[in-house]
Image (cartoon, rainbow over all chains, first blue to last red; front, side):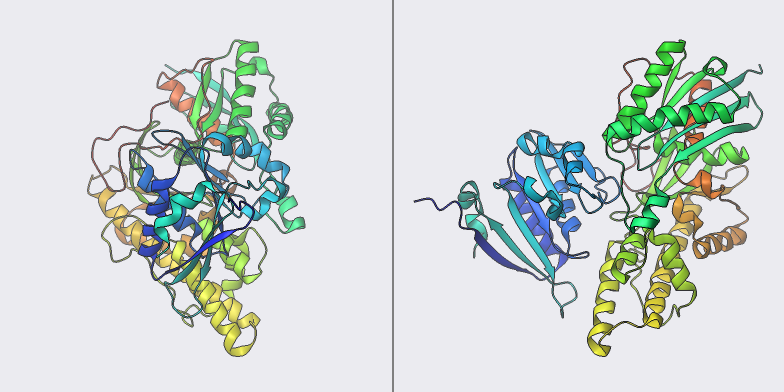
Length: 162
Length: 365
C-alpha cells in the first residue's frame, strides 16, 4: 500500500541557529550516495547555514565550506562519495544545470541544492525538500518543512516526527 | 643572471575569460604588455542579473579570441613567448578545464613550458606585479567569493591568518542589493545609496568582533537587513528612498568596521614578525569600496604600515596576475607537464585551519 505520489510532510520549529545545525546533523546521518536534498526559502532563511552544518558533520578532515553563490557549485570528498553543494540562483537557463554536471551528480553523489526552483523539469522526484522560512517576530527562529514523495525517505525520517 | 621572460597568462576560472602577456627582466619590474578580459559586465547591467559563464565551450571559444587579442596588443606572436601560465583552480571546473586545455594546446604546439597557477595566488601576488614589494607582506583578499587575511612569504608560501566563516563581503553587498531592489553588482550600487544615507539610524550587528581571532562572518548581516526592511514596510506600508539609503549606510558601516577591526588583528600578528618594510595590500573587487579603503588607510597610517591597493582592473579577475604568478613560480623552478589537472578546490594554505600557525607550508601544485 504505497502511495508514492502523495507528499508527506514534517513541520518543525527551529528556535535558534543551533537547532538548524542539529537538524542538519540528523539529516546528514541518514544520507546515502544518490540522495538529493533541495533547500527552498528566501534569502536569509538559513539554507546555506543548514548546508554548511550538514557538510561539516560529514567531512573527514575539517575544511572551509564557503557559500556557493559565486562559484555555483562546491564539491567535497566524503568517505563514500562526493558531496555537491550547489546554489542555482544565478543560473538563467535550465540547460546550465546540465553544464554544471549536476544531473550526473544526482546519480551517485549526495547533492544539496539551493534555489531548486531553477531545476524546472529536472527536479528529481526522489528528492527530499527542506523548506525554510523566517519567523516574522522571533529573530533567530526559523520554520522548517521536510517534504517528500518517495518511499525511501519514510523509514529514514521516522525519528524526526515528534 | 638577467633573464628576460615573456609569459602568456590564461584565466577562465570564474565568470570572465581573460588572456594577458607579461614580461619581466630578472630583478626588474614586471611589465604588462597586454591584458584582455572578456567580461559580462555589460550584459549584467542590461539584464539586471549576474549571468555566470558555465559552459566550458563558451570559455574555450572566447579563450582563442582572448589569446589572439592579447598577443596582437602586445605586438608579439606565439614565437616570442617563453612559457604559458594558466589558472588550474580553484573555480568552476568547466571553465578551469577549458583554460588548462587551451594552455596545454599552445604549450604542446610551440614546445613551451607550462605553469599551473592557483587563482588566489594570482590575486595575492598582484602587489608584486604592480609595485614590486618585498615578502613578507600582509594581504587582505576581499571579493565576491573570497575574504581572507594572508601573509605572503613566497610565490607558493602563504599563511592564512583568518577569513570569512560564511559569506564574503562582495556576496553580502550583492544580496543587500537584491533585498533592496538595487542593481547588480551590489558593491557600487549599495555604496552609491550609502553615500546619501545616515549610517547611525540602523544599528547592524558586528559579528565575531568579540572573538580575538581574524575570522569574519557576514551572513547574519543580510538577515538583519531583511528584518529591518520588513519592519519598516510593516509600520509605514513601504520603503522610502531615504529608508533605503539609511539601510545601505548602516550595512556598509557594519562591513567597514568589522573589516577594519579584524584587519587590525591581522596586522598585529603580522607586525609581530617584524617585517622589513611593513605593507598591507588589498585585492579583490570589494577593495574598490571607498569607505573600506579609507578605513584601512587610516589603520595603516597609525601603525606606520604602507597601504597598497593595486588598480581596480588588476584587483578583479584578470590574466596578467596569472601570467605574473606563473613567472614567479617558473623562476623558482616550477614546471608542470601535460598531466596538469584542473582543481575545483585548491586552498592557498592547507595547513592553517583558521588561526595562525608558524612555519606553515603553502599549497603545492
